[in-house]
Length: 332
Figure 1 (cartoon, rainbow, N blue to C red):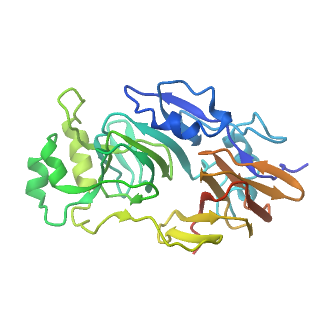
Figure 2: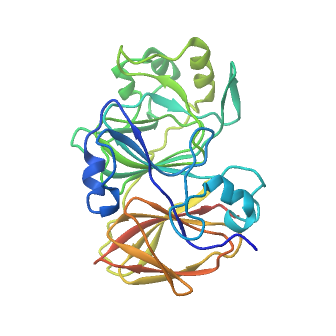
Figure 3: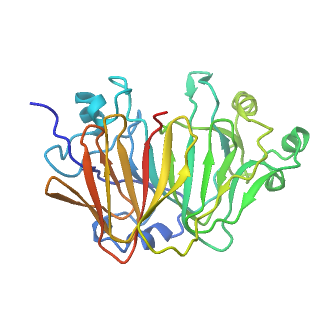
């Protein structure tokens, strides 16, 4: 008997943090399924398959099984034809309530070892859900900054003048491939997406009580940064007044995945053809999926994975408008 294929939803995994804004709890309060979230939750993992934490399927005949085990049973049927047996699921998604500004970080363009630790290439994507008035997101080098200015600003607030700093608006997006510096400031509620859940290299911290990178870590981080990365890095929200169901491309030219936003006012038919899974994230409103007569409700902020070999499915809005992100493997 083969592995059952149907839309998978997952149990949320909560991580506490030293400070939270409360934006995550407010955002998820519109969905009754998040009532058991601890008050100090800083990160809510919605899809993850890493060395230390793995998602568990929440619905259907495979409920209670780990994403890793289910993927190992039918890797190509679930992930796509190119997926290697025993490889991790190639996508991590979480919601983050950022109460304290992150360090400035970067991921290397090739696997880097610092002592016994391994740092891997990673494509990182941030989607803004909400923010306080003073919140900022940093991504990429400043258009006129130099290497000398960058090095002189390490571990200082002056670093904000050397990298590109943005005031996030809801539904703005920021894409950071390997080699691009990135930092999410305090006061942000973001959806974070990446190839894997491994750590980035720390480049710089902001406060004296934050642990600075060792000389060896800093050297690896500086070698990883693409210092000529000076183009604007905000992917601005699309604000057209067209009132119809439509699909809006966000990321097209990433080696790992493509991302589009779905504005759903009624229904949308789609399908997987074996090449890639579809991961759907409901970011606003209410919606559900129907496949062969079965109905699967989409939890707000949660992830639903449509297996690569499942075929046709239909999305329906259960509110005036629903917004979703659809993530799939890059297949060109």
